Image (tube, rainbow, N blue to C red; front, side, top):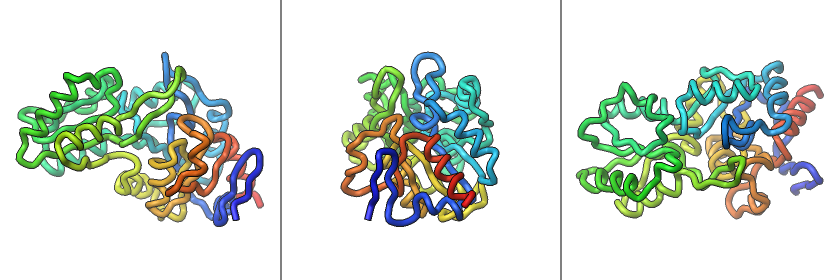
Length: 281
């Protein structure tokens, strides 16, 4: 039986009691730590202190993001300017994972990504492309650019499309914005193919974070604002998944027909408070 209060939802099994046996916590970033937007964006109240408290605990902490509008270094620098204690080695975005796949399979990409992400691919051969990579290109998702990506794919005998995440939308300070998944679906439909997703909710992507911590899935907890990609993706890998009511959260998430979070909390600060209180018992 699910028990409700004005602040959080406890599922039948595990939350927040599972915190006692945790060894690691994985945090989404946009919508959990901060809302992106003009300038560096805005830190969500309590999130800076919540990260600090996790770092001072005996838990390992990693950050798992589908951010594809900047290189990892520039993205982390932005979070540091907002006041977060975060280093690049703790952050797992899709672009470095995509580059590893390209090298492993000897692929040369046509890129439909944000200008801020292009430096990540400086060392990658992009001549005569035999695959397409799309990320959150924002304003660069023009008809011309989408059509160019379509033409590359449709001209290949065995078209390969990589998508750096598959989110439907995300939140900026001035409202919700369409995410890469919408454009991924357009290219899938036009080319009659299935994209390979690099980033959440890919099990391989989550596993790379667990491997870095040296933990089994049942020893880690994912906290995110995206019910399907953060929470559902983590649960599919055997982790517990907790959703915050910040970022892209919608009230309908708590009545979703196929994905049920292990817990729902108002914000990251409340999640951390519950975790640390359980661990003190």
